[in-house]
Image (cartoon, rainbow over all chains, first blue to last red; front, side, top):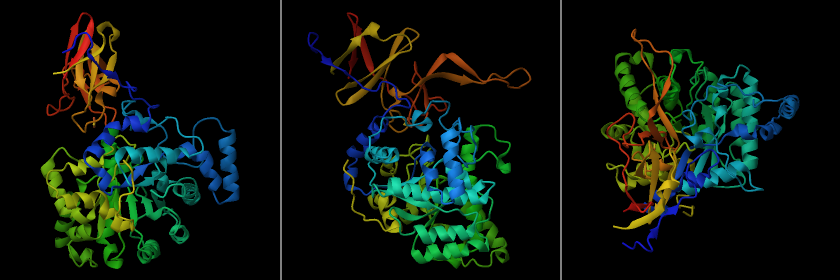
Length: 409
Length: 121
Ligand code: FES
């Protein structure tokens, strides 16, 4: 010990993380963890991350096709006071995700960005760099409840404008950023048009149906869309969300409860319809991805449907095997938010869904319940091959991506 | 053991902190109710930067004699350090996780000599 000339501790530049902190500082420990685990040599695909598209809504509305609506939207943003986004429905102020300011990156990312580069490109690159991700699939955030819009045509206007804007401003700039393009599913003919138009656009690796909606996904109106996707080899993702208008969740008063159930319930309903109506039998090569519902719901639904199906096979005459078998063979799942308080249950879940081939890593960054790639790496019961599949190779196969890592950690 | 000089003890005012790098480790030192408490800046949940999180008093919900509730309150005597990654809350004095005894902050050793604050690792 040298009392005269002691080793000096170095004060960290960021003493307290807030909404102005740089993503790279917030995630500095993630980056250290990624290096420590040697992720440089691992392909890591993050199949579900987000940006806040409403920050750029004034830009996005310029991509609305309808000239009258576009004009109205542009005037709205030029002349109206207040923070609303033109045409957007949703829960307005019922957005408590940041736990009363406790999780700043969920509240907002107000860090300085680089001049001349779109904010969302910079923020996504910083997140990829920090987490050690090669490819990041970007989803919108408030638009995830657009399927509940009282004006079906507005879902079309905004959904298509979003796709065009995202391709132009973000995806064309960085080939490591991908999207599952927004499908305006409440108007089936427009969904078909969207598939036809956007399938081969830069960065589009499939299509996304936000799951909060009331139209049944097994309706005959959607069969052409499914056929088009199957023919093109492009997956369809059902991205979960919550909404306080859901009557089945109307008694829930705590956001914790709403988030825990809402993000699962919508996909449980769709999955039940998807399987019992035999969509995987009708379109055996169509790959469906179930996004952001976590994993704990899947064993429950598998058992529940199997059990009921065997007693009432006449009500699901298209099925040639158990519901759980379709769920394990024809469906893919994203990991986040991976429930980890009971490791035995998690291990069984991964076995039941055949995680080695069906599970896709997702961070959900920058949301409050984001996951890191190292959570998969650190699981004690998986082989290295299984970990590599889940972290990137399953996604590479599903989306036709080059399996060679491209990041520089 | 290495001794790292942090600052003058008096430089950390009530309710404030210093988060420092000592070699390859990071330590947060906080003053609560006059006392200094030091924790490793690695959250027991997923190694997040716990010591760089906000401080909130614990939230309580008083229940009246009829078993009814009306308002939420802050318990100012129970200050929580909140992890900025996922919001896990830890008592700043004991390191105990709000919600489970299975998780606890990792304590770091400190000493004060001649008014100077040192971390011992
Ligand atoms: S790492 Fe601290 S709450 Fe998750």
